[in-house]
Length: 151
Image (cartoon, rainbow, N blue to C red; front, side, top):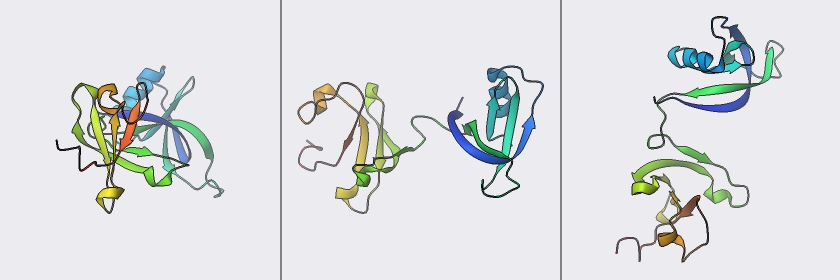
């Protein structure tokens, strides 16, 4: 299955109740199969939401609804990650898969205008990264190191 789901709060013009689905799993499965379904919610009943709207508009009736958003064709080796960073804003942005780091998993790159502006997001490796930082598990953001990367 290549469908990912994320919880989000959005505003919608339309909501359609799907009475046939009595559980979150059934509701999600129905949304996954429905090409037109982009957002669903299950809270004792299954609802599909559509037509996002501006909450300041009076016709926008379904405001600030917590829904599950469908992300088709998604996978850890095919989908970009949006990283937000308040303290070091230059690190924020979209990191997209560019390679595989063996058993550690995928490597992501944020393309910059120059080599110095390009960053990589990779799983932390104690054997490779411990001389630079101390981190148990998690991820590391790196720049190209022209002296060491190709040795």
